[in-house]
Amino acid sequence: MTGVVLTEAELFERVRVERAAGRTFAFANGCFDVLHVGHVRYLAGAAAEADRLIVAVNDDASVAALKGPGRPVQTALDRAELITALRMVDYVVVFPDLSVERLLRALEPEVHCKGTDYTVETVPERDIVRAYGGRTAIVGDNKDHSSRDVIARIRAQERG
Picture 1 (cartoon, helix red, strand yellow):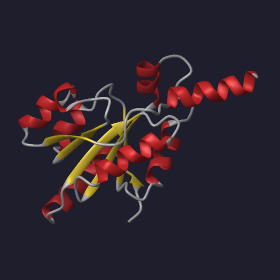
Picture 2 (tube, rainbow, N blue to C red):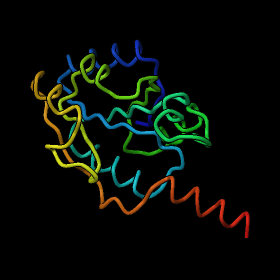
Picture 3 (cartoon, helix red, strand yellow):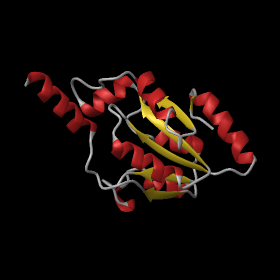
Picture 4 (cartoon, rainbow, N blue to C red):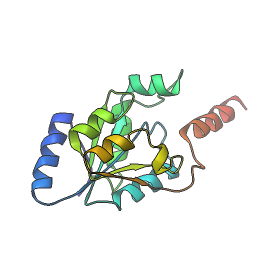
């Protein structure tokens, strides 16, 4: 199965149908502005947590609000398409919020996955996930990679 970008309504329906068939869902999210190996390792770890992996990608306005001037460097649709190309990803949805709380409440994925820059205790949405009976998993490699650093290296090379 290759990944597909869905609207929220399409995703909700797909989850309903697949859950009725007994499948479980892991949920990961991020800006994914410049795809790097840390993203791939994070998503591979998330995919290992359930039958299907949903990836929520921040829209352009939320990336700008979260990351500041000059971001994103790629459009949300381009970032979403790149994520769908990864074999471990089943569903991608672009979302406008600054946090994933609303999507977590609506989808109730069995596992909410966050990167190693968090601990289970520091994940902001952990109480929401716990309230509906889900669990939080910390996945991926050590946080040694960032889009910010990749962008800075590219900009430095352009100047040099």
